[in-house]
Every structure is written in C-alpha cells, then in structure tokens.
Image 1 (cartoon, helix red, strand yellow):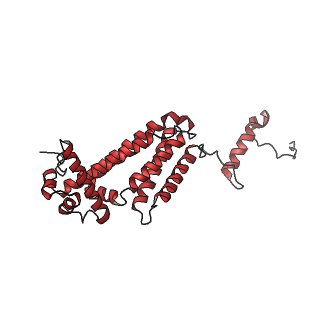
Image 2 (image 1 turned 135 degrees about the horizontal axis):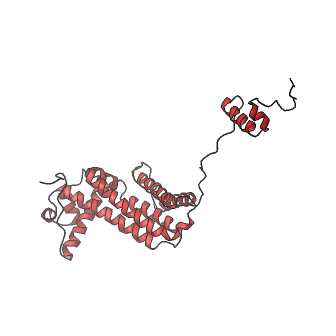
Image 3 (image 1 turned 45 degrees about the horizontal axis):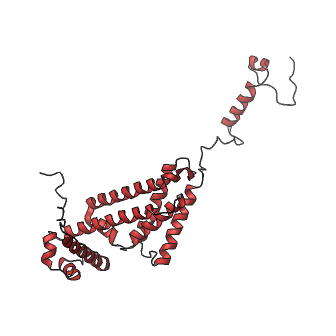
Length: 259
C-alpha cells in the first residue's frame, strides 16, 4: 500500500543513445502539438506522426497520455533550470549583471512555450505544482549563490530578504507575461520588458529603506492627553517650591498673589 495512490508511475527512461534520441524527438513533437493546439487536442497518434515513429514505439515508453504529459512537464522544468543556471554562470560579474541575466533568462524560459507551461502545471495538479515549486526553489538558490559576491552593494537593511523580494517580483512578472492575453512577444519587445524588470529590481536593491519607525506626532490643539503630557514635563522642571506645594505655577507674565 502506498501513501500516494494518485501519483503516476515513472515512464521508462531510455538506456541507449538511440533510444534517448527517439525520446527527445517524441517529447519535442508532443510539445509542439500541445503548444499549438493545447493538451486536450494532443493524442498519442498525433505525437507519433509528428515524431516520425510508430504508435507502438510511444506506448513502449509511456503507458498512457498522462505519463507522456508527466515526461513533458519534467523536460520543460529541467530545461528551465539548466538555462537559467547557465545564464547566471556567464552573467557580468556585478549585482546589476546578475539581476539582468536572471530577468532575461526567466522571461525567455517562460516565453519559449507561450501558455503551455501554465497549462501543464494545471493539468498535472498538485504533484506538478510541487515539481514546479521545486524548480523555482532551485532557481532561487542559484540566484542567491550568483549574487552573494555582490551582496554588499545591496543598500536595503536586510539584503537577503531584499534579494528574495526582487527575485519573486521578476518571477511573478515573467509568469504573468506567459498567461496574459497580450504578452510581450518578439525579440525586441521581450528584451525591453526584461530590461525594465531588471532596472526595477536594481533600483529597489540600491535604494535604502525609508519606512522607519515614525516618532510620536506632536500634540494637536485640543489634544488633552498631549497637553497633559506637555504640562507634566514642564511642571517637573519647574521650581522646587512649586513642585513641593503641589500648586501649578502661574502662567508666564502673571505674578503670584501673596496671601
């Protein structure tokens, strides 16, 4: 008995180079069909025809369409991890260089399959969302490692939290761009959008915190509590005889009447 009865069985991994090449061709064909027509329209027969293999070849590797979608999801997530990691490894050695590479790599990795990536996560449910979260965690860790040598350039009070905030903002913007009805498309538009995301993140990281704990506001006219506090302060600093007698000192400019 298993704790995860709904978890799909792992598809059979290829053991030979020729089989691996065939699998890559099948997955590429599946991605092309799913990207252009959607997952609902993707069939095992259609994938076989696009990949130039027999349907039997696909069924020897995958038990059903669900396993094929699982493999496609894994392939796309791994590709994103590798691509972002490579771009960060070759980024310009500076904080702005790292954030710029991160923004451009993320936007490109989401844009390469348009709406397919979000659809894959929805289609696979919780397990796929967990796998997607794992990829995000890995990419985030790679970013932190790449930015670590330049952490002293961050002017926020908590550099790690600030970097996390900037990374999440870029990730959210890239994901949103992949599902919005009017995404930034084309090389020039995507490059400009990634530049703007990077500029936004750098401007935030290089701006010191300005929301400090505010001092108590001065007492307003008619504020009895504030007036009492002001009076208590002044009376405590008044002459010793006044404080001993318990009487309030006379207002300024008015002489006390001797009884």
